[in-house]
Image (cartoon, rainbow, N blue to C red; front, side, top):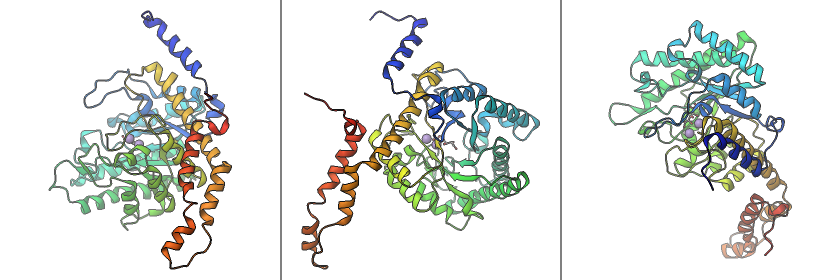
Length: 412
Ligand code: GCO
Ligand code: MN
Ligand code: MN
């Protein structure tokens, strides 16, 4: 192939996107509760070892593009859109007015707001630091985010305490720090009850998000299970207002089976919000778009969620790679992420209604014929051949993933 001039490159990408096929129209995409984070689209590609590769984008542009793609909901950190120095001032309310206008024009709704408690140097010792001044400021920031949420019509607030922990041991006492952290959440819930009553709105759903490592060296609430224990610790004044926002990759990062982690959250009735992305076990937070690394595992996760009637948001918390351009973020990255999610969600429906999987599952549950109740050998013998269905079901799931149940066969 001849070198392709810069002015021709988008055309090539557009043509190959069309050649891929399988894109859903924006109206179809809007039927799913998919939210696009401000920070994901505005991510410039920077990291500890990486300079940015993309130029800044305004929230007006992000919201407008999400609307065009068919992403019907938007989520944001307070400081993604309001400079730290302007929080709580008139400027904050002016910015919120601009956001409301942009959302209305794009036909996009704000689903979730979250407080940035990790980036600014005020959080060097975390949001539940020893200094009462830092803790008062943290509580104020959380309450201010609740206000922002109500102003923008959000239903969810997310908390990711990634800086709740330490790099070096000794100075931070874990039980005390967790008590202090609970105080900040209690302040947010109290404020929410008041604001919601005044505005005649329901209170927000407050969702904790765990990540096992990064940015602190050791994290005090590293997993969704730890978060559930924290909710039930007795430290929260309103545990009924606090649930979870698990992130697929954050569970994978510590080596968990994300599906089992989600099942534990479901059993506790706390699966309220879900950050969707992909990546690798026991690696850093690579935040790859949903389904690009573990499509089979993702299919299984969505089977679990669909069969339990999960109806919360699917938040596209990934980072378009540094190799994607500003244009590509909205032309390639977000539309393909949304479409993979929709395909996997529909495929999960195929799994649930698949006659082979249904019959195999029923047969396993029926078990063998009664053998001697206390005779281990006889019981094992009576169920032996049915257990072949475990592997058969796994095979069938792969067939469904690559479309064999709909007639895609390699005829040789
Ligand atoms: C991460 C986290 C964040 C949070 C966000 C919401 O790995 O950086 O997942 O993206 O989801 O801060 O609170
Ligand atoms: Mn996340
Ligand atoms: Mn992440």
